[in-house]
Length: 149
Image (cartoon, rainbow, N blue to C red; front, side, top):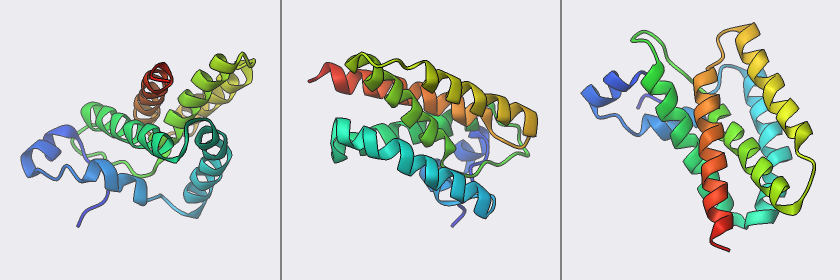
């Protein structure tokens, strides 16, 4: 079973759609895994407290899917992506929505999101498209979840 995420044309041709999810299980080394796990702990705990376990998982998986699909759509034929960063950026988006809802100053969250996008462009080899897609997925899913309350 292949776990990395190729481009959308490859997914269509092979029907290996499971890669949209399995990409989050593979990382490009221990540092990559460590950063993602730390971010999941720091972001996940307050978001899970705000939404509950089920809705937290819904935000995470929607962000994972939107990040993966955005990455696959804009990827070149020879590129592959790995990691859970798209879903992590979705949690950033959810944190913005929760923060605004409770009246918190969310400017620091914007700064952290901006710094992480800049790092993606400066270092290279980082899939900013997955980050952007995941962020949008997190913003949208958190908005809908909070509207239902």
